[in-house]
Length: 358
Image 1 (cartoon, rainbow, N blue to C red):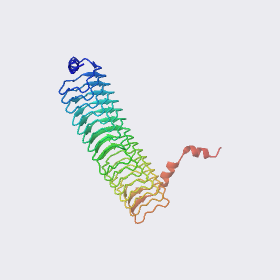
Image 2: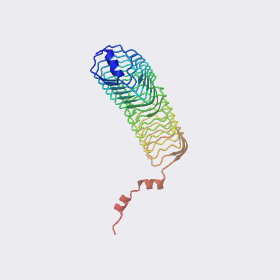
Image 3: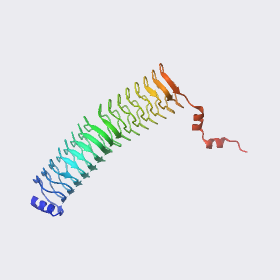
């Protein structure tokens, strides 16, 4: 079979099946709306070709060159694309499903509303790429490079990014549910408005990062470095922040409800209007923290330090405070309210069981 045969099939919208065109030169070819099945195009050249809405099913495209190709809404299903070159290309509404893209190059590419489903992107190069409204769902991302990439409205699920290159990465709005970023140095990066529910960031360095509005529900942040982060209104409910460092952070209106803050360092931190109801913060340091209108009701604060902290109607209702130290603290706190405590502890079933008969 020849390239002329392929182009004839494409012109007549007829599926092209079982071709053997490895290394073919398809520069500038019109393959818009083409359907290719079980075809070998390994190492083929598609520079300047039209591939809009083309469909590739079980094709071999390893090492193919797609630079400068028209790639609006193409579909690659169960294809071999290892080492393929999309550098600088613009892909819009492209779909890659169960494809081998190991070592593929997307450096400086623009990806808009694209989807990668169960793909192998190990070692892929997306350095300097711009991704918007793009999803990478349950993909293998070992050693992927996202250096200097710009991600907006991105979705990554179950992404293991422990070996990824993330220097210079910026993300604005997205979902990284259950992602693993443990051990990374993300110092100073812009990572605002992200859903990191259930994510692992054990020992991750995020010092100075912009985490405005981020969602860390149930995330594992043990030993993480969050010093001087900007995270107003961030939600850390049920997160594990044991021994985390949050000194000097801007956390006004953040939510730490039922979170673990045992041994955490929150000294010099802005915690005004924070909700930390039910938090476990034994041994934590709140030295010189600002706690205006903060809620610490029901929190475990045994052995915590609030030296020179600033209080203003800070709610300590039913908090456990054995061994709490607050030398030089100023302002007003709200102690346990007996009526409120009785209402919270009252169980009509227990009262009925205890009532005398007759």
